[in-house]
Image 1 (cartoon, helix red, strand yellow):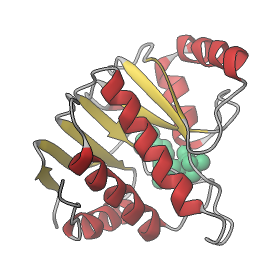
Image 2 (cartoon, rainbow, N blue to C red):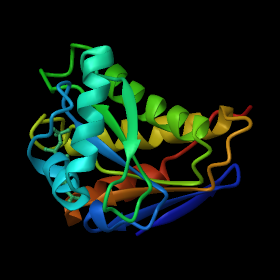
Image 3 (cartoon, helix red, strand yellow):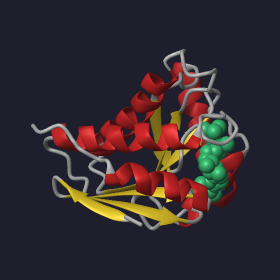
Length: 188
Ligand code: ADP
């Protein structure tokens, strides 16, 4: 089972476990548009990180009124090991003909772009949209990995060296592994 791949100087690593324990500089939260917390990985991140994260989310909400699907915002990591949390909002699966793949790709792209802007060197992603939002696992893994590969092929001036994809369960891990072996980034 393929578990890592180096691409354009960046290590893409598949990790099974709990993203709140990640040692990366930033972790990504699969948030909802309200930015006020929720279940799944969102709840786990707010529980582990403490109230400072929610306070910052509320300030962002006051300034820009939440976070639309596909967009991303950044806060500190509170009590987490990660110094930053990038909150992004994936699409709710509505059968696949409502630009779900486009919005999911944007969520990964905008999170990566924000990480580059903040000169973050390592980042961990959960499997965005495949829990409560119902996105089929294999399809979501394919979008996630293709988007990351394409982003890395085009990036310039970004200090990222490590991207972790954190699978909470073995079926997510298997889906990532399958997609990683198909990864064929566009050449720059
Ligand atoms: P969404 O609303 O975007 O579908 P969920 O949090 O419901 O978000 O689920 C997204 C994925 O995150 C699912 O695969 C779920 O199993 C996983 N997940 C839940 N808790 C954690 C955690 N602590 N660490 C990593 N992944 C998690």
